[in-house]
Length: 108
Image (cartoon, rainbow, N blue to C red):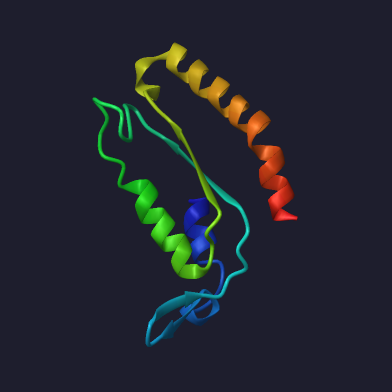
């Protein structure tokens, strides 16, 4: 839901990108963004994972509007019960501890 708001936060495409003969050029100020996704199973390159179509698709969408600094945090195997959810919470804590300070510095 937030992503939809982010992509539609301005009226009209001319506020997000300009169509040029060589292709679309994003006009939003590039700043760090994070996409958090939850998955019931595995997602990505590690077998038996399902193909990850979300990450490249969203990178392309964000690049079209001018945002290139995008981090992805994938929470996997959440359908596997409370232990999997606890691992996902630990993963989010590790991400915030390790990456968030750098991310916030880049945003300012």
